[in-house]
Every structure is written in structure tokens, then in C-alpha cells.
Image (spheres, rainbow, N blue to C red):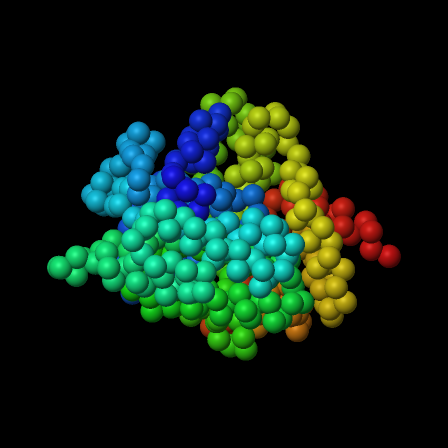
Amino acid sequence: MGSYLNTGFRAFELSLNSEIYIDKSEIISLLNRFLNTRQRYICISRPRRFGKSLTAEMLSAYYSKGVDSSFLFDNLRISKFDSYKKHLNKYNTIFIDMQQFLSNADKDVSKMLSNLESEIKNELRSLYPEQEISEERKLNQILSDIYSKETDSLGESNGFVFIIDEWDCIMREKQTDADGIKLYLDYLRALFKDRSYVSLAYMTGILPIKKYGTHRALNMFREFSMTDAGEYAPFIGFTEEDVRELCSQFKVDFNSMKKWYDGYIFDNDLHLYNPNSVVESLLRKKFLSYWSQTETIESLSRYTDLNVEGLRDGIVSLIAGNEILVNSETFQNDMTTFNNKDDVFTLLIHLGYLAINPYSKIRAFDNDKSLVVHIPNNEIRKEFKNIMKNWS
């Protein structure tokens, strides 16, 4: 097992050993459908503390070669699917925590990418000692060579699975570094786009992929987010069924749990709960705002204090329990480009502070593409009220 290449199952095993674990392994069956297809690039974004890293660790444990992780998955939901055994531990898997690389590089994007290339090349040298893996050659060139030489006479090769956690940390922590962001996105495009060695590329973060004008920088990726989660919606958080079972197990009032942490609503009337808040509430036996214990509350204050026309009026209306219309079309998928209040509100949807109500009756016109949003629950409303107290 390596630090980045075929990282094994230890991280996921720790989650399975936890007092509270909800089985979301069925997402693997969805991803397996797209292995080695044109649709093999998938980016799923969701708010902080919604289980992004846990899912990434699970995928690494499932796909990684060189280990047998069946003892972890044989009793999970994925084991009931026909594709389970076919892809279990069959792929050389590269797991990259971008946040870790950025922090280790003192938030220098160029240094981060250089370190990333060097570390992964070192592990490839151990796995493929017969290959020419020099520091001068780019990682995408090396992976192309490995793939070509590993492909058998029938033209079959499993290729590589890439799992990128916190893929958008550069956009969040280097918000004004336009050159660094462009360098990073160009690097990802060169690593992934039209590369035969990619069997699957799975990215997860908070923000959707950065736009330049009306175009996305990584247009090979199919995106699923808090504004359009598609078939991946049940895996973004805890479902109502999950929470009911947990409340029964821990002898906690479900209706109180619902008021505090429900409110993320998707198609088919699917209600999702913030997993971290539910777990903390069950373990601590208290209904509190657990978001205030993370750095995300600083983000809320930063964006609600922006001098954008109509923003505070909208927030006051939301705190009062009303719904508002938000046009998300102009949002540039970053944390600095705000042309109007709707761009700020769209960001707050992706951060988890606002939620969409797809069944609301308020619409300007039948063909209106605006989203109807609200403050999802007591936890978030409390944070908004705390922020409002500081307004002059």
C-alpha cells in the first residue's frame, strides 16, 4: 500500500468501526456503470461536513489493487449488485487529497503541483520498476506509457482510477490567485481529458467546477451538486429513513431532529440531513448548531456582509421563514465573482446555508428557471440570526 497509489482500506475501516455508520456503498454501483466509458469523469460537490472524504476513502478501499477489502464490503449494500466482484480491488487507484498537498506547499499552487507529481512518480517507480519514470517527464506522459505497456494483446487494460478529495481547495483558499487557479485547472485538464489510462475520475469538493465566462474549465466532467444532485442525491447526506432508524436506536425524538437538521430537499421528495450534525447530536445528546464549531461560520459572515444590493433584505426575509427566488445561472462557481445578490445566494446553497425547495408554489412564471430557496432548519437559522446581530 502507498500513500497515494493503492492506499488500501485502513481509512475506510476506521469509519466502519465507528459507533455510527450509515451504509452509502450503493454509490459504487452507480460509478461502476461508467468505468471505461465516455461518462467516466464525475464531480460530486456538497457542503463541508457532509461526508465527502468518507466517500472518497470508501471508493479507494473498493477499487485499490494489492489488497483484499472484501471483508469490509461483503456485508454492505454494494455486495448485492452484479458489478460488485467484477471491480473489487481491480484498479491501480490514485488517491489525492488536494488540501493536504496545498497545505504542505505553503499554499503555493506551482509548488503544490510539483510536489504532487514527484510523490506519485516515486510510488509508480516502486510498482513499475521496469518503466522509465524520470523527474523531467510529466505524470500524464508516464501514465500513458504505463497504460500502453500494460495493455494486453486483446487490447484490455484496467487503467487507473483517480479519486480527488477537496479538489476545489485552491478556489477556496487562493480566491484571488487567478494565475494559480488557471495553472491548476490546466493541470487537471492535461491529466484527465481524453486520456485512455483513465478508467474513472471521481472528484469531490464544495464548489462546482470553475467557469470562465459561460464555459467550464473541465468540461469532460459530469457534475452533480446541491443545485442538481441527480441520482446521487441519496448519497449526499443522511436520508429521513436513516435518521428515523438512528433516532430509534439512540432513543432520541425524531421530530426535534427533523426541525434542527432537515431541510435539504431533492426530487421525489427526498429529504436529506446534515450527517455531521446528526451524529454529533446523537453522541452528545443535545440539539445544537454544530456548524458554529467549524470555520464555515466565518464564511457565512464574510458573504452576508458583502455590499450587494438587496442581499440583506433577502436574508431578513429568509430568517422570517419566507422563501425567495434565486437565479443561479450567472454564478461563476468561485468565491470572489459576485455580480448580484443571486450569485451570493447560489454560493450559500453550495455551502449548505440555503436549500432548494423543488415543490414550492412560488414561481414568477411557469417557465421561470429560478430556484426557490429557504433556510433549511433551526441549526442554520440560528447562525443567520447570530450574524444579523452584528449588523449595524
